[in-house]
Amino acid sequence: MTQTKILVVDDEKFITWSLKQHLEKEGNEIFTSESGEEGIEIFKAEVPDITILDIHLTGMSGLETLELIKKQNKDAIVIIITAHGDIETAVSAIKLGAYDFVEKPFDLNRISVLIKKAVETLSLKREVSYLREEQYDKYSFNNIIGQSKPMRDVISLAKKVAESDANIILIQGESGTGKNLIARAVHYHSARASEPFVEVTATAIPDTLIESELFGYEKGAFTDAKTAKKGLFELASGGSIYLDEIGDIKPATQAKLLRVIEERTFKRVGGLKDINVNVRVIAATNKNLENAVKEGSFRADLYYRLKVIPIFIPPLRDRREDVMPLVLHYVKIFNREFKRNIKEISPEAEKILISYPWYGNARELKNVIERICILEDTEVIYPEHIPSEIIDQVDTAPEEKASFNLPPEGLSLKNVEKELIVQALQMVEGNQTRAAKLLGISRDALRYKMQKFGLL
Image (cartoon, rainbow, N blue to C red; front, side, top):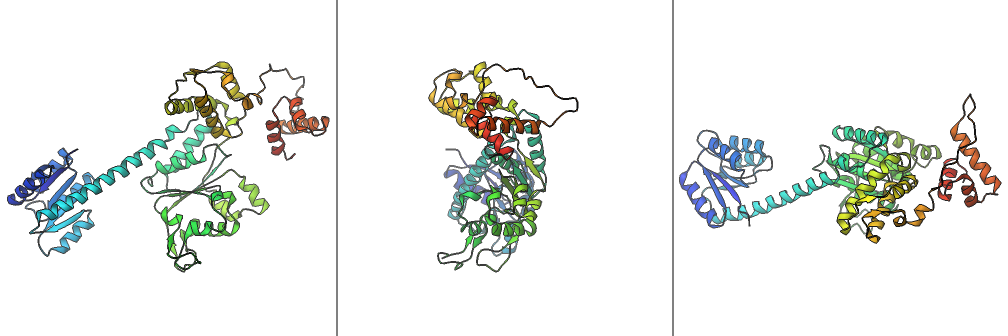
């Protein structure tokens, strides 16, 4: 078991000797100093876990020594020794960050109890620090895979936002594009990283409960409200609240969200008192909020308030150069998780993976690679290892040269694509499978394009 390193700073030799003898018997490593100046030098050199510091020292005072220790390490645990009845000085030390204090003459057993509590606190702090570092590494921008220019632009913008004081961010993109990853990276690379990141998925909370979940409630606000409860906004104060699928929140709740965002205050359900919060709001949606505003299902004022800094993540099919880097990233993860040894992807398999439109985006791709790693014991991924539903939607036939000539005045590619789809559907009397075959695409791809052009 690692010894606890303790520094004792006191100008009374008997006290430093007594503490050293007593604490060494309990298995601690002890350093002693008779002045604040020497104590600071020992603190810098040895980095003790706990410092026991007399507040009244000859030369540099105990309070000055405490301040310098805290400048060296703001999380340092310092126990103050003070004269009997000098509570005012002890309170000043606590305000400067001292852990606790004992009055002279003190009981050595009281010191032992304090040391034990301090060690527990130190252990907890180290665990929190470790978890914080783990989260920082896990949600590092370096772990967001994207070599394409659109993704490089997204990551660059997200980094700027993380480092800024911006309190409102709107992340838009289809399901599976990585909105959650961007949101967490923004939080864990910001000045708020040590504070909470609270995630709220609007679709996972019943409409009748979402208000009390977000804002909390007072005792007696409704039948089952036996005690008051803090809402998620209060729990996130100082940090970030991630409102996923915000486009699905009902208009009544939208109005209250607008107030929180604009005024940084809200009332609990059944409450009369305004509660202030300092929180960064990161909203995300896979819906077109501009269309939702036009349709009347989303408040225009909330939309424009959220859209202060919009981040749009393009779908994977629009940045196919990101497919293989993602594949290799997931292979590495699942090789480790499932003890596999996949070393490469064959050119034929690579062509299929790049050609498939990935309507579920990176999430769908990850699931496919996970499935391959679970089921296939191979060092090379070949086409036969790829699920048939993926292969069936990829046209592997040689490309035919189009006989269509572009007119000199040009034309709208969007209109041509829509017209070809309309003609194909008319030729087969609306049979989508046959129309897709005529156009050389999968039925799912046809349905996606029909939805895009308002033909469904």
